Length: 162
Length: 401
Image (cartoon, rainbow over all chains, first blue to last red; front, side, top):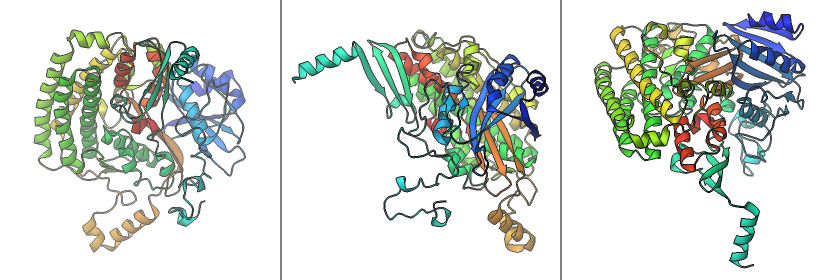
């Protein structure tokens, strides 16, 4: 198992792990990300399937950056979660995986998480001067004042902008 | 300043470079996306894709919808093969719930998924051909696409946005006339694919326009995160239906076609062969289709039949509970992937136990493929960019979400 291997090679890197419905998940600190990724790459996890994030506004480390890997030889999947606080940058994976380029741009666009060392960290889906980051939990569903004409009430959330 | 001096200044600033906008509303950009091309003569020196024109924020919307309510939004991801999105999403929620759906529902899901794979490949191959100038192939194929859409209409009542799955099964069973019409479709579509191959596969003009265009090595394709027919055309035999079988795909007999160079021609050949294999799977489903329920028998998941709601107290309560409070979801996170027409379509669902999902992430197969666009066309001719774009099968609804 690759998780035991990571644990043996980089002791203490895995701060938490769980398996739910057969999905293996490990949680690591962002300082260990690049070392773990190098190890994963050598272990055969060469298809970086996805990068996304989840917002937990109540937590001190507000975001989970979530990576999904697939090992094409063994068909094993692995989910790696990196918790980061608001305003803290995560190291980019564009050096190892070209596909990380746009995935990281999308996470930056929709969550406002910066990726350190990314060659071209621009917004991907929304436009350059878009107000805020749409997938944060505190971004209103109707887009907020910037998207509402004066006197317009929000039709969702009982009229509140929460 | 005279017009001539303005022109002179522009030329001194840009050299011989010329900026050409492909899109946002150009027929070959397949949905609304824009590519800014920098040209030296006919050669592309830089290509900057711009996207987001179809961004609706479905992932944001999902957080305010219940699990069932999100199904119609999945139709609008890859609108060329809506049922595969429905199936992929329903499977992810079923994995989260830890439930198994009835055998007939699984078989019908396979049947309709393969039908929509054929329909999707028809769009990709047909439109790619028409972009490069082979109009006849497009017309012959689109007749079959219409027949496939007639079958969707028969099954789901809708042609394009089917919303055919429910969490725990299907919206309804297919009517009796569905099976003979599908059998007729198998015969006609198979003949149409042969006809297509006679038109294109050995056509020297088609070869000139597609061979060696957009070629990619297997390592690069994996590194770019490619999946699906494009990855298989580069020589990687990765198909989730074989590699990580779901919905009983391990019990069907079919082959995975692969290419060698990953160029536009190989992607075309792989797609054509995949259509044949899909027809083979449909044939097998029809042969073993047994009558039975198409919805799970679990009042905590499935809505009770309407007549019971009106006559039985218990069913009325279940109906009320399901509509008002939703399903009882466990706390946790799952990632479920299916082999959609473009590649690996993944749904990552985070549940906090509430009525609505805490977060749904759609992993679109064409986003990583499209991200490699510049490396695919750089140094090529502008006409090749059109061929490459068509062979990538970019569906903007899925790309932008």
